[in-house]
Length: 179
Image (cartoon, rainbow, N blue to C red; front, side, top):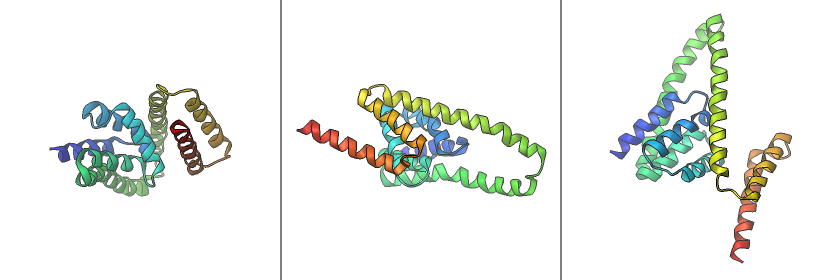
């Protein structure tokens, strides 16, 4: 039963995830936290962190992680396939249609209408994650959030460098707590 639930949940996520992995975060949260209870809100925040720092698309990483947690290796495979299958089918169809009709004003108008909605989905996911991540954060975590944002925005460090710095800081703080 868990495998069918994983397949269906991530098939729906894959089917409705227009705009990529970050736009899908609110859908993933609705399925894995609210509907099925496979993760807590804190577990979901951890999922986003792990999905971001591992190679590959965020939604697929999330599917694999949740599938592994809920159903072991077979659950990981089933959830990942559920997430990927709709995208493969839709992408193939859109590739064919776009190549054939890309110059039509109707196609360009539709793309112009979709862009703001994708931005809204990404902004919603970012706001939800920010609220979840900072709900129990102390001043140091909030300072790191601000410093990380500025460092990325100014181009002082890339995403991998920032993740490495944050991991090193977290390990140093952990070591200090042990002392």
